[in-house]
Length: 275
Image 1 (tube, rainbow, N blue to C red):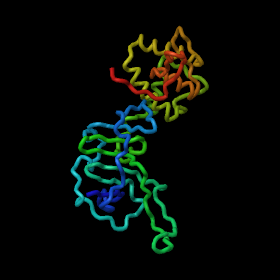
Image 2 (tube, rainbow, N blue to C red):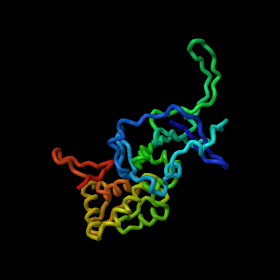
Image 3 (cartoon, helix red, strand yellow):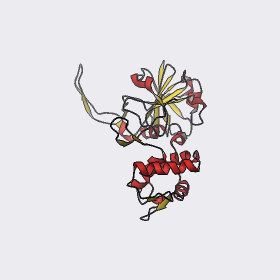
């Protein structure tokens, strides 16, 4: 039996059962090619991320750790639409999740055309997306998703997989001896995307010794000479967000030369291949 439950903002219970019977979603055809989540990887249009052994993660919710029992959830009577955070369609041990945003809730008058033509004054309804925001296969213990930001409110704490450098971490990064700040550029001017890149760059640099760090700086200068670089001292002058972005791309070794056409390029997305 298929069931649809809703996560409710309520002091008495977390979920209410909306209805049973038909399932809301189909398993996408392109799940087979899902890739392990990596912050540096940007999905192609037909790809999904996956997290294996999901029930072992701290951010896995109790709903997925326990066996589904429809009797655990009271029947919804008149649910306040704005109290619904997300819906979950349980279909044969597969859980489909969809966040409920304001644009998913509609209330429109319409003329129904059937055996009789009549005016339907309309009631509030939730628009079901063609594809779920997240899919959990309980038998395989795998969570599939496309956008971490979308599912973060469902799985609290999952954003730690794609962390953003804090103000303190950003300030500390800018004090590195290979960075000289210019044009009043400082940590307060570092935006969200560069903070995410800084978080990854810090992890990368922690794995380098002194010689490797110097090599990565020379490599960055070789591929992007537009950044002002004091080669003898190994210092880049960073005066804006663009400068910072190109330096961080270098630290992540995203620059490369094509083997046939000999073009210098930058990889906007990377995936580590098996050795």
